[in-house]
Length: 348
Image 1 (tube, helix red, strand yellow):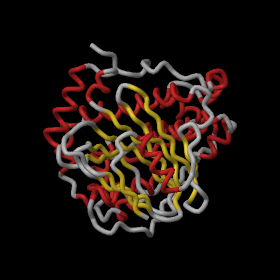
Image 2 (cartoon, rainbow, N blue to C red):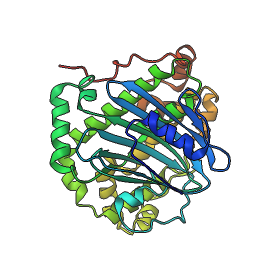
Image 3 (tube, helix red, strand yellow):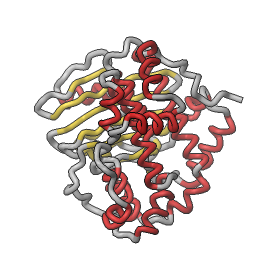
Image 4 (tube, helix red, strand yellow):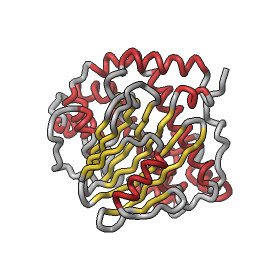
């Protein structure tokens, strides 16, 4: 199935989806009809030129969405998406990094209105995504002018004619978990969404800038190597209840020597392999605790711990609090939105 559009406000795009799927939206949200799959799409305008589309979809028929380019640059589009239940037998049609990422993997993708883009949603894979439209004036509302100007300079110096693609980490997944878990039931939905969207934008832009000096090293990796490393990352984080794959097994999956695999993985993801695994493991535990559905022992078992003391120690090392302390605090703060400026870089 193909869907072509030229909408540049996500609330308008949602109306186009309504016509395509023959459904009606309810307070900015549409549920996929059973004939097309399961999941939903939610669109909102957050003010200051920021438009957002949050979606969780598992399609029965693959879809290719094509967005037409505008003649001149007007704004940026940031897409964060995370895919689960990946079919390991599904192969990309070509060894192109951008295309390969779109087949059941996870990524952050930055582009702009003057570039046309294709976005492939494969059938049978649950994909959660946050799509954000923003411009320079949007950024100046929560970042200092020096940071904004540096971001603009880097983008137009190196990425003007090409979509920028990067891996995502545990913190992005945690924010996606919160958004897709609490979106429909949060009593202060817009404030909640705005806070999380600001966190995503801040995290992405600061990483984009601070890691720019590393880009030359990362770019030395071939597209096919990056694609294999991303597949290895999916295999590494696939199931926390079992022992993680060995370096030897993952390096064979990447068709690399163990030494090259370890070095290239750290280059792409910024952390040594098992440190990255442990961080993701603890972020997943934190997300489970914040859901409020599980006992601490259950959460420990769900991420592979049989010893509750070891789980508590690992959790405190990562977050500075014990799992029980977080659970108790969450009982009092659930659904109370954080101050949207609390974790955002202040203007100078």
